[in-house]
Length: 541
Image (cartoon, rainbow, N blue to C red):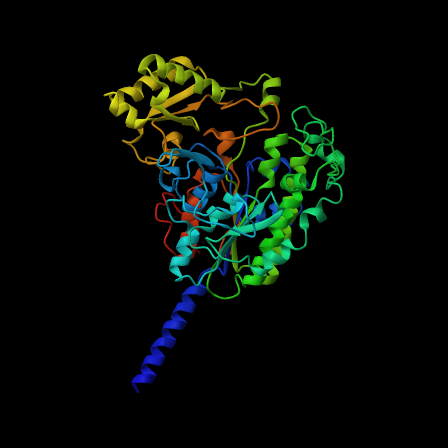
């Protein structure tokens, strides 16, 4: 009798657990389109298919005023903020690369010298999420289900794959541009999983680049952009021109591995690997919610080289539209329509092509980082007898040498204020200057009231931080475009939720990137990430 009671209790517990799980989506898919601006949804709207971006816009919840709330706006911090629901103030990813005060060196945001590559022997494999200081929504899902949920992530960029996957992922895979294959690290596994290895064995770089890159549509449709042959663009593929069609015949095999990232074919491989992950890992196959993170990186890489209004970038967006259409069709058939949540956003936006703005008499410029570095070093020699008082200058921040200050019996607050005053008096390009003494009395918030504070981390950031006037860059660039500020052109991004329990609506109230993880946690009825400062922006039906 006692055995029957125990069996009945266990059965009831299992049924209760499965019932609770049925109230959740079977799969969550996160799509980050690197450097996609909100306006890219509408600039090319007439040329998109009915089953890609337009389907998400018409059937999902489209937030038209979604913004980043900090600076520096870049890939590493962006992916971290999406998935942690907080800003660099808490999650610690203050830049793609940042100064490591403990070891007196520059550090890549996903660099891990204690890990080793799997599928590669070079430094591109020595990566992991160890530098991420807070939990992610993917971590919280793992914790909620006692690791029964599966979490996988795929991207061209290492940071675009690693950070969304969180600390507890089953796998994260990224492209190694030195060998032309997808790799991972022993943080996740000791041997490359078979379906990734099989994909690598197809020699996809050689196959994709064996023929020209031609425009998807008739060339006349692309005339809303700058001329195809433009002075604002780099000759990426050594063709002696910047216009279509693009050939890769002048590149060595090694050069092709790197050039591949700048073609829309790279995004296609990310899509294909993501589909392989769903199939081979049975994602969304039962009532326990799984998570798939996808980051399309080529839009960012191409914009940096050719600018926002190139034919190439437009073609990439049209092909991403096709990628999304293919993914939605696959998910509807494999996981089941209405069984998954998909969200789409970007890790940052980007300024209009700076040289184009300059030529059209817009207020733009560059402070020139080396000029600032040389100037503050000269100031240090004049006022403090040595430039050693400056330990590092990077990411618009000055890191002071505390040992030097102590030995010289200087007042740390006074030193901060002297450097801040010098910056203010010397560089007209600077908008605001903050010292550590200012920033340590405050705490990051959900809004964009203080973008420097939100992007500053007490343990990792410098002692003096500044931002620039609107339109001004660290270094002015003559070709391509960039990002990094807290201004609207760098912060306004697309944000769409689609699928399971998501209403069709357009919402134009202010929301922030930190709200994404909070919303997902609310929809899945799990804990939000441990440092989350966002709020849910969707109601559960």
